[in-house]
Amino acid sequence: MVEKIMKDEHLVTEERKAKSSNGMVILILNIVLMVASIFSIIIGANLISNTGNLFGILFIVIGVIYLMIVGPILFAGLKVLKPNEALVLTLFGKYTGTLKGEGFFFVNPFSSAVSPASKNTSTGSLGTQDHIKVSANEINIPSQRSKKISLKAMTLNNDKQKINDQMGNPIIIGVVVIWKVVNTAKAVFNVDNYAEYLSIQTDSALRDITRLYPYDSVNDDNEKSLRGSSLEVAEKLRHEIQKRVNIAGLEVVEARITHLAYAPEIASTMLQRQQASAIIDARQMIVEGAVGMVEMALAKLSENDIVTLDEERKAAMVSNLLVVLCGNKEAQPIVNSGSLY
Image (cartoon, rainbow, N blue to C red; front, side, top):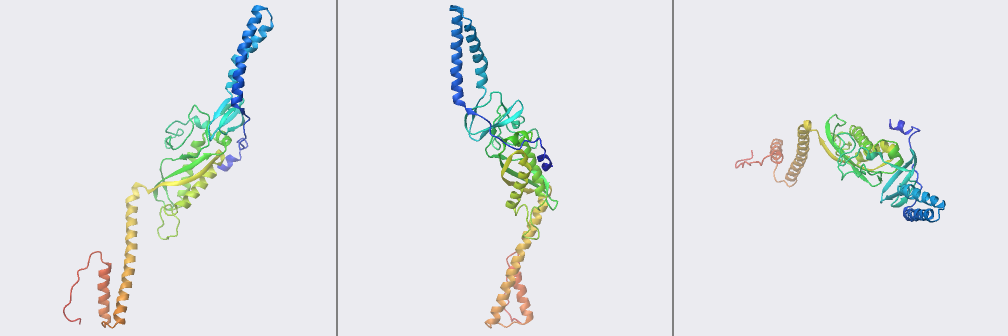
């Protein structure tokens, strides 16, 4: 679906620099000309009243036109940008370029700035969907009154989702995405709201990637899982999100899993399974160690000729040692004061 959209010939793909001039020079020049317009009106009025010269009307008309119309219009072309901010400009509906870089600029006063992300974005929420909630600290989108596009690295932290893993077990998973705008033309014209688009594509990519891995490896320690291969899963998730948001001119800097747990309905069962698996592993290690100690004890007894045991006594000794070494509770020894046989 994304590839089909990207092939659409109506989509804007190239960002170009907007034509601009030094804003401070234009500001000073415009103020000087507006002051000159006032003098022009005064001079024209004096010419008409004193000499009756009709050229005075021309002075008045020129002065009024510049003072009341041209001057204020030129002020509308002055733009101020802070570091890592941009303005996407259109002239009568046609994309004319993007203004980037900090400073004071003058552009065509009839140009208008466009930023669709500011239409539906309000403080504390992103877009109109209830499940996409982002605090003002986590994502820095200009307010409704501002048309500036932030080029800073921003954070997207959607709500946690319930997704089935590869084994069909429901899990609760959450991710955080670090992203920024790299192509303002694509971000503004190719999608309706680039921040909301990123949020929806992140949820979709997270579901697709989660279904490829089990929550945890069961039998094979080399098996890749969401818990054991978090770095690989995060990189694959970042790549999948990036592929989906290229159309919007966004760059996904990093994607990380911030929350991973079994769903509440199976959490207790899975905890029991993990506990049982841990007990089995611990018991296996204890038994292996006990068998080694028994072998060493029998070898030392035979090697030093401390005592000679028949097969029945060896079996009894092995049984007693294993009970002592593998038991859950401390063994209570029974002292045999009689003959061994």
